[in-house]
Length: 280
Length: 151
Image (cartoon, rainbow over all chains, first blue to last red; front, side, top):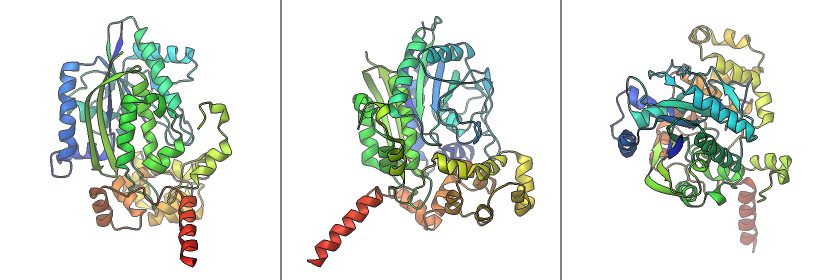
């Protein structure tokens, strides 16, 4: 039987990819960020997931203004890195797990989540930067990846509660897959940041720290936080944090915290890395 | 706060967004207004379109049914003005990527600060949320301060 063995969170900002590409990842500015990922990199070497369900948001790459799925799931054999205006990121293709992805899609639809199924999709920095941060620069990614894009760009995005419930349903779907697979769920994006308007540059350490605490220990309260609170407190793009609730929902009621890293700034953002395991 | 989604009033939900200082939330209204501007930006994901745009920006823009104000905003790289025209920063990122500029460059350009000042603000911990949570709360605070001063 497949099982969800861990949940990670990661930033997915393009500047991290650029730092790798330009060889500046251990300089004075980026060094502390990449150092903060070293623990997770080591952890993954022993955790060895077979499949990562990677929750992220597409940044106007696979989806333009013509198609805006709230929740989509990548069911293809492979996904190419998107050309986001500066050429595709020079990283390996993302290799999917169509059997598991289709299984999850079917289960989620039967649980009344109206998933959009993607049989062809390019993946942007939202998906590939976390892979680079956690797996480094291998010739091919060490596991299969099921990309799960969430709309957090055009309002309204899904509620935190809906995201949490989706995570719960993903766990049930994974556990009903007959093959013995070690599956992780990653929630990416965040933490507090705003990329637009005169309020750009907003960072809220106090909010972010409370968010992490609640995510770990009190998701039942956190899942009901309304969008306006994310926007006011964590900035307009801080809404990405709802995606972390999908990861959290997939881990069950209690979790064990293995690792926590928080850093300001990563370009325009506060960055949070968590490693959690289900604890009953 | 209600646990029942049926209790959410969409008008109140949307109106609250207009209370956040210096922020334009990408609502359906803005998504409709900016449809063609954002699709123009999307077109720059293709190398051949980037080349045509760079060769003659105005001519390329004239192929799109977008407002003159939006075209001028693009030509001036005025990102606040583009967002006022319904642009969204993730779509507009194709434009500043075409220019070889980063998200930090674009975000900083919207604050009225120089690039150096903006980068330094981020290194110093970013913009504090204090005083930029709510226009109404700011007005109320200002009003309270005024009435206090009049005594």
